[in-house]
Image 1 (cartoon, helix red, strand yellow):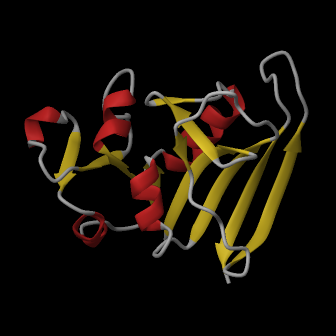
Image 2 (cartoon, rainbow, N blue to C red):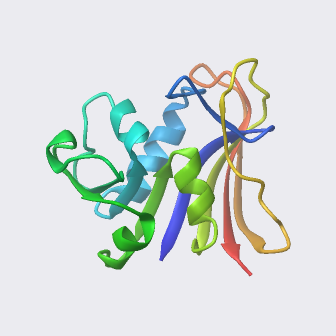
Length: 161
């Protein structure tokens, strides 16, 4: 199964200056719970944004046409999404960035969204539009503002119809 996992704002914003827009501890816990023990696929910029490099207890795959394997310690390097997916077994999670998400929308079986009820002032990276004629909501878990989360948010899973 190929899943896309992403936190998106109401305007589909996902990032600003190669960083996540929102710091959501529960989203990070969910991300870790879902992806641990599985394969994660990301673009070069997403890999470079990881504070400690390759994420532990997961097979990390980086997509880069010009990169060298030594530039991505702890990760496998592929020139494109098709070759990367051909090398995978089991659960695969696409974790960004925007161009990888856009390409993966055609092959994804599931979207694991953290939908943030907010529109950020600053964003330069956006998730592609989701055509709800192609997707069915199968799970929604709403969360209110609390001491660790300054915006309401929902975990929403969609599967392809």
